[in-house]
Image (cartoon, rainbow, N blue to C red; front, side):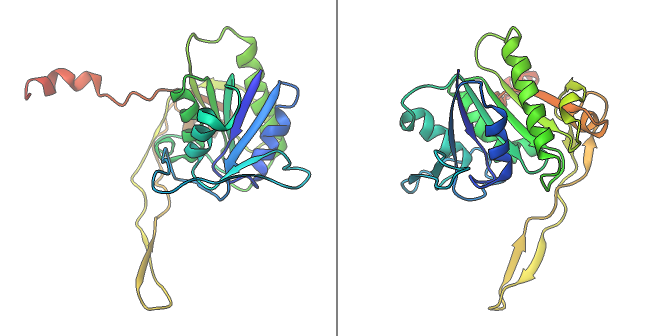
Length: 250
């Protein structure tokens, strides 16, 4: 088993090291992660400048490959020339905060896993529901239990993509796992306007909105009940139900 691990919080993030430790014994592990925190970069690829790759130093980080780009850059570069072999599984995380509902469209954590999926490799994105790394070791144990279950079961043919959100609780590994669909959020809150030292206006993106669709069966509902949410994702954004209506206007 060869596993590629990436994230979006940067190579120094505790969640990345925790996921690497959790995968010990599964096989050969390669870590390729962003140099800086790249949260919210979605599926962005860096096309207007060359990317640099260096190897992290330090006992805990030795062997980590670091890319001065996005999470998608990390996986893309790894799969198209940096690694001498093709991994069997791509993992991303553990993210500092949830990636549920509409968040998945912006998430660099999900995007890193999605990049593996686009290359035809089974991929899983892991996130903790609350920020702050609380009960991180428990989340890592929960991630390992999901990986073990997936590898031990009859996996679907072809590549697949899972988005996993883990509650910040001490017994996360033993919590019920629910297969869910993505919920929805209300629109983001208003931008925060400030003034820089030169007197010019600057704007911060506002906080995410509250959950709008958090009913039974959604990722929001499952994690609110203290369960681990596992959502199968796809990349096809086509509105298949509307094709006929639009065809009449062609």
